[in-house]
Image 1: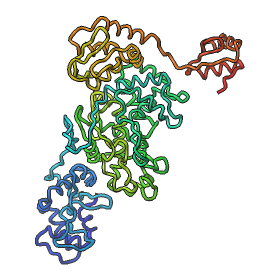
Image 2: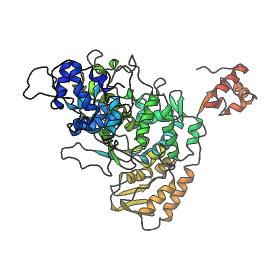
Image 3: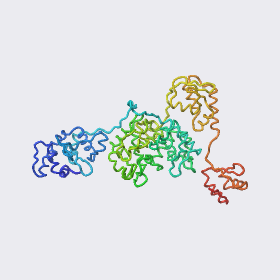
Image 4: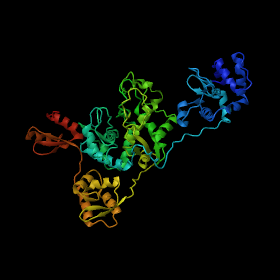
Length: 592
């Protein structure tokens, strides 16, 4: 690091004369070395603190940040994020109106000098300044126990606790994958329209936004979030893999059906951190060029950084996205999205290059990536509760960029305003060693009747209570439900437990459950588990009875197949390759 004399010598005579104003009585006549002498003499002695006292509060904070930086560097972007302002290195001359003037140098220029890359504190001043310059306060991440009261003209905000939904969804979608219901692309591994619809029918509470058709060709469509994320997360977690055109469970996925849902979710999160299945930034599809020459950064380090900052979030406290973004910038967060930003663009690769973004770059890239990870991954996995509005016109930090005039949002995640790290998230992140699902307090009372009717006798059903009843019962009126055997069997197939429903009903009814209801639940529990899916299989038809008899009886193929009728054989998918090889050795093939 250069010394004060070395840095002062890089200034022009005009600059030095401006700085002499902060040393009363100093002469402004003479050669450069004579002009510098009183400045260097004062700064080397008792005059240092006198010059310090001429700084305003913001300038003193700037010097403090640089002096206590360790390397003596003033980080302008981090300072602006922490304090919401920048210190003045120059001020306009009194009465000056001359075009192109940069103003007169302030006393801050005696402490912070440009070395070609940064503003720095001269090495010979650092220890002396530390003696009286206060150490800056640490960065803090603002949080609150409750969300702020919305303004009268604010957009309607949705608040969702996500953990109960995620614990339901992960089981439901594992079973859907085991049944071969979810179709995904063999190239992108993303579900298409049909696959998204299947997932939407399985997830609790629906997606974050209701699917609506655009009003015209110009309106941006939000599209699925949870419904698209779950198939990818199951694959990233090595719980599901592509079998043909549909997802099927891996051995780990079959085992996961027997585990506690919270442990399955935690396993998915940990596997996702190192997965390369998808770059979440590609979901911000308004930003083009990501697959060309942009040289996107590796996803693993990015995800690790987001995880590190989530670990620093207080539990059960609401944090605004703006505050998290500010905190990350103030900490000097090394969240690199792309190594060649000039090749990313909006609309047109020539006019819309993000290389022209300037101060917008963080909000366009880092913030949008952060929003995607929080909303599409963390909220889907139930790690954070969320408060969000429609993304349309939710953020106005990209309007100066070329090609955005007709856009009402830059990403479908722009509506996420606040999040809250919950107990499931703390467990997944390793902040807590265990997780116990928290039962929501009842918001209503029920009357459970012998004819299997469930009547709301007081209060109103919450969203979670509605979901619980809807899993097991058919709605006859707003206040009356009837336990339904078909729905109950379907719920048990999806991994629900009849004992949970019994506890739910009993907690809300002051009378013991009727014996008819207990018998109904007992029978459904037994019959709902009457059959078990062991594996997904192929049904193979042989050309004639003799071929079927030979293959079913031969020692090399008999152990790999089962008879299913006169000319049909059943082969498990995970045994298909072995069966084909053994059949070929016998002289028989299976055309694709």
